[in-house]
Length: 220
Image (cartoon, rainbow, N blue to C red; front, top):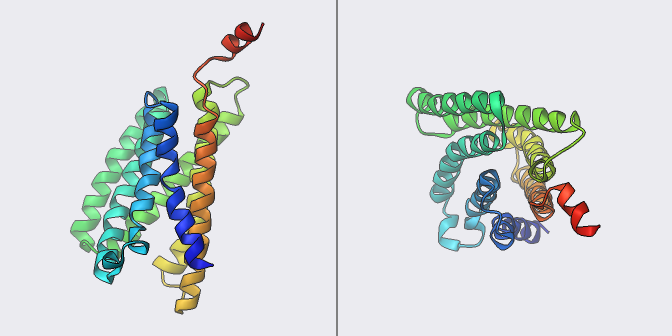
């Protein structure tokens, strides 16, 4: 069960970028970033498929690198999908976060301790911005094609990070005391990874660059 679920989840991580390429929506930079973001989520799990990368040292290094990339990547997505004043605030947040990462590495070292702190702030910021974006979407009566797709992408990120809070407490903070408990936690992780990728795929799939009034005109 664990092996099948993890393999399906890892494979699903490559679907968003494939949909972007297939639908030729490369003009939407935020979509490209989220596609690369999920692709990276698949790449860090490659040790499940490639035996020589299953070495604990490899896995540790891959995890540390990914945790450094995760925050800036998701903040870049929010930056590119935001507008006006909010975009400027997220831009400053992105710069602050990169400086914060560097400071943590200097203070705590390049290890799991600094990574745990970094990924904790990363999770808080991602959840806050997701909730903010969804609330802003629901407050509007009319939406652009991009916004109609982004609501599903934001929901997928919210779900992913929301479930990650559980993983953070049990895996990063050490609440999972046995190997069985740790496997159960990661089973939840892979299930949430698959569902999040599918929700992103749905949002990308339903993206239509034609404005609503054009559809009315064409169907008249």
